[in-house]
Image (cartoon, rainbow over the protein chains, first blue to last red):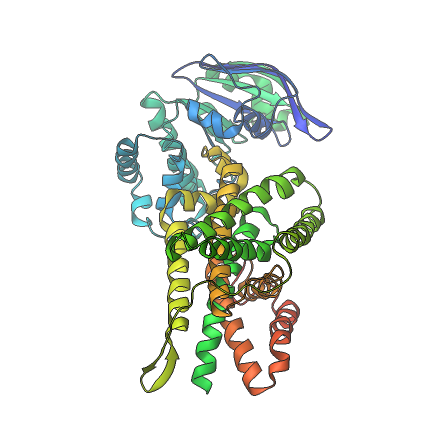
Amino acid sequence: MLTLKSVQAGYGRLPVLKGISLHVRSGEVVTLIGGNGAGKTTTLRTISGLLSPRKGAIEFAGQDLTRMPAERIVTLGLALVPEGRRVFRTLSVTANLELGAFHRRDKGAVRRDLEDIRERFPILKERAHQAAGTLSGGEQQILAIGRALMARPRLLMLDEPSMGLAPRMVTQVYAILAELKAQGTTILLVEQNARAALKVADRGYVLETGRIILDGTAADLRDDPEVQRAYLGKGYQEVWE
Amino acid sequence: MFFQQLINGLTTGSVYALIALGYTMIYGILGLINFAQGEIYMCGAFVAVLLLATGKVNFFLAFALGMAAAALLGVILERVAFRPLRGFHPLVPLISAIGASIFLQSLALLLFGPNDRPFPIQFTFSTINIAGLPVSTLQIAILAAALGFMGLLVVFVRYTTYGKAIMACALDRDTARLMGINVDRMVSLTFLVGSALSGAAGIMMAIYYNATYPRMGLLPGLKAFSAAILGGVGNIPGAILGGLLLGVAESLGAAYISSGFKDAIAFAILILVLLLRPQGILRGRGD
């Protein structure tokens, strides 16, 4: 469904992605894990068109995304829940959700989707008229996910959905992801929290300083000694002693 | 006399507020002060006056076409003077705005000459009594029309999809793009709406003072800029409040201090606000 071929990208003269190749098949949940500065966020920004790649190719559902602007890409069915949630703080919760469907012309279906999402995440109904900035971090994350779902994405991308959330909220956000997976939503999930990500994912890639150093099924990655040491915090003591 | 000055102040203040809305909306989305806003105001007035002078167009159509011409000028200005300069240091588009302002003033001088043109329709306005106080019906008409336009703008921004999309662009441009919002189109739409309001303001002042001339936009433009700063630039209710307050302060100051100080009062307020509360009386940008 989504394919990246040797994608290189960066900011100004600073290269961040040094040739990334990966793919996501329809119905899969794929995770991209790695430490700070590995290029996870840059990868998602490049796929969604906020950053254009210097080299390589990006293809989604048979369309070439390489030079397509972000506002077109979302219309193809690729939605991003950005890092740090990025809700429109002074707009109401409902206005945020409506903007998620900005590009859709099927107004009747948008109305039904809005109702569905408010049924599914009751907090968004309770806080419907409140400014999005007054919500807690976890509630904002749920709003950001709901906003992305309003685009009716064929592929949902999430950037660090657990970042800065209380453990209880992390559990709740991941329960939502598991539910979306059960409904057959295709997901590309970027996480620093490898433990949580590998639990929900089918497959994963490990990113380090702009390169993919490892890939495999989620189970394989969970059992990989290098992944365990670097990202899951297991066997940490043995290495040092 | 106090009441009369209050009405005078609210009348001019409501016109400043209309121009200030243009400043504040454009600042909200682009972070840019469009110093050619006064010339857009002048353009609206000239188009309406020239159309009416032909004697073939009725007043309301001329008013609407004057607003449309101002809106079009705003959109063209953004394309020519601002869009090519995106990503440059903020001083660069500011200089471009001042350049555009001088250019448009000179162009109007060349086309229409330096003399005042009276408004081609003589309105017969009377003075009516409201609670025993005399009020001109012209002032009531201007105040009502200005408040009506402001109401329409607030409804547009708060309740329509495109209005919310403009707010989204002002708050977070990248995330707005992720929603499928074309930022360039929203910038054009902002210039369109803001300039139409300035055009309406120009026509109303041309009727009020019965004068249309190339430099007519200079002082109201600068005063509306002060009003936008006073209210907190980027803040829509702030621009309305700032415009009304400035108009009233100016009118009362002229009456009770000296009419010679009339124009100085707006700028004294601007300097005081910048020194004491630079974020404006209501907070600025997007709030």
